Length: 292
Image (cartoon, rainbow, N blue to C red; front, side):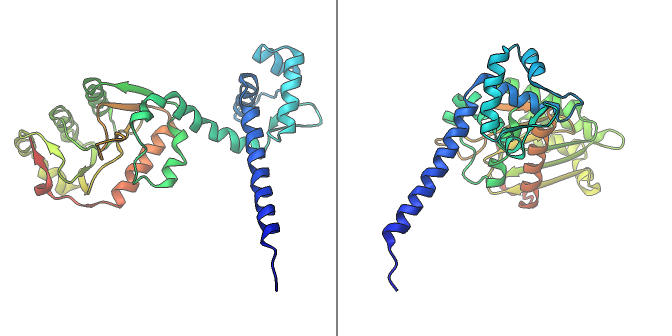
């Protein structure tokens, strides 16, 4: 039986071109401040009792009736929004899905200078990259001194737990965490270090004097080890930070700057990444550490 490959190829190209044109159309509709403002306004209304018709949207967004009418029609034609019989607009399922992806573009574009010299990590699972928009509502904190001070504040303000995974352990953090775990009841302290992690020479004496082994035996402190650490995070029950590796010449997380937030979505991303790393880690081996 003869199969005409030419027709198959033409059909495949037609399908691909149609898909590209559809995607281009969506990007075109999103390339408008007014249309984006409408989408975000409708997205926020879903968690409130507000309902937006044409005139209310125009007033809320300070857009003329002619402009709001034109932009609403474009969004309706694109399938991003819908209008009920009373004239109330809302996001479609498609619109809801699209708007969740906008945060990804926003996070990466706002931090394009950072990601011009950093990567998301070659070993990072796709499920975390696909959720990178969860980090959008965050603050960029540059400078190692500022970063360490931020981590010390996160340690001090913890009420329930401190989870951390860092390629190096500054002495300041050890001195800050010891009083927290020695409190009556004890703050839960779980941490992950990579093999050959750099730790200060004073660390052993500090931990011994604090009776650190006792806290390990009682389970207040738990620790694990990974081969290397490309993405790192430090978090308590409300605050979180995350850092990524340099694009060239460095395979471990860059501690010289971090993203910080108290946003629940940001915290959830960091917590999930920590748990994923924890359950895929190895037993802690003190001999693998590098004292400096």
